[in-house]
Amino acid sequence: MKFFNKPTREQMKKLVGMMIEFWRKKRKLNETQLGSKCGKTCSKISSYELGRRLADSFEHNKVAYALKIPLSQLYNWKLCPQAMEYIIKHKLNVNNYHNSTIN
Picture 1 (cartoon, rainbow, N blue to C red):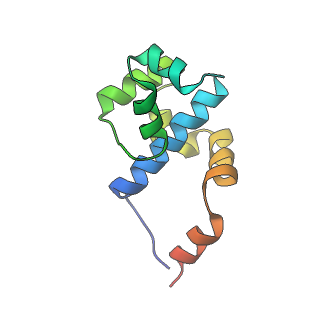
Picture 2 (cartoon, rainbow, N blue to C red):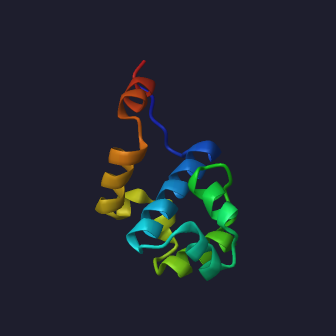
Picture 3 (cartoon, rainbow, N blue to C red):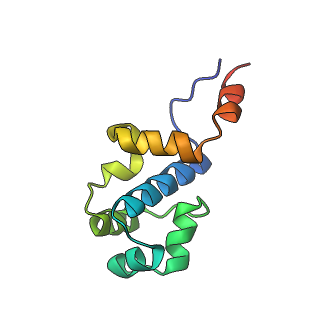
């Protein structure tokens, strides 16, 4: 079995993106509305959510503030069971994840 102590940059981009999307939908905002609340364009919000871009913590702090959540909620999906369920159900390909963790 492979164990990962620290996520790679690519994994982090995807995780943070999924968390932004989860909280945005929970707050019933579209990408344009969230972007206007934190001074970002719709396309930048989309690139965060799709895991194409990982912003610095200053930019993430603006997003978290606009979503009315602590910054830590963007970095740790285990802090929110609803987010964990959403990510597993809607975003992760569990079969691929399982297969990639077993040698």
